[in-house]
Image 1 (cartoon, one colour):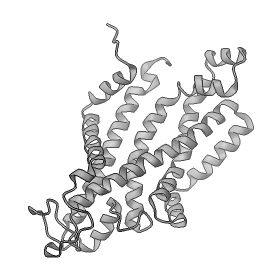
Image 2 (cartoon, one colour; image 1 turned 90 degrees about the horizontal axis):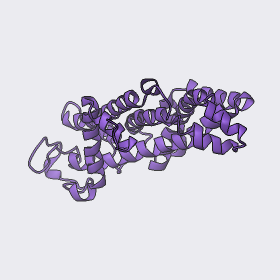
Image 3 (cartoon, rainbow, N blue to C red; image 1 turned 45 degrees about the vertical axis):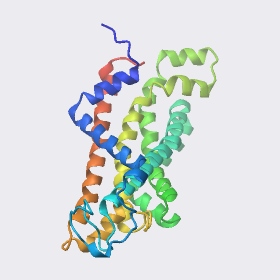
Image 4 (cartoon, one colour; image 1 turned 180 degrees about the horizontal axis):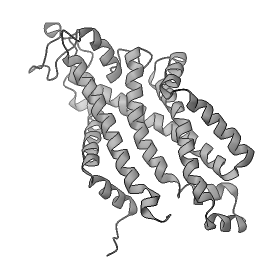
Length: 286
């Protein structure tokens, strides 16, 4: 029996049917809810200092404890979720916005254009993505915008290579040749025929890259070149908690678990999307 549901709804239903992906969706949904409604659900201002409860553990006043300055850990964790999601969305969006057009141009025109663009991407891939992000963040300064740019630029070569890899197969299909024979313009062919049939791996890579972006932002914050205090991020929470590891390990455990769960959730959802959207499993291009 043929389903009348929209293809996107079908994909979501298949993804959620996978237990690991369902867990990931729940964690991501909770994180998004906390980030969006942070102004209404944070118990206290993240920068309010409670000098009567320095380094206190779990208590009625501070559900996840307080740091060495008496600041509420839960409030800072919720505030940090906003930064984690903004960086992941912004960085992946930037990577897609630059990398996908470059990959499409490369796969369609081939020849010298393909060689120049792909060798440029290979040159970027030679350097570890984290190293690129650290260098750019250190050079541009530790603000939200510069962290997004730093992590996003590191994503560009991967997005370009993914779309090119899938596009090479689509480029040889009969409907592309027919469009060229019919006089359709180059960019119309790219965005009407090649892109829609090559987008599935980009969606998968984007989901996986969001987890990497969260991890990279935390790493930048931990080494001190990310978003600077007093703005709370999960990375600088770990940095500030590190000297207190023996006195109050909860300060490191809380943001560490948050990073772990969110990155794991993006990976679970990305793996599920890869299984659902894999063209080889469908058998046909749509």
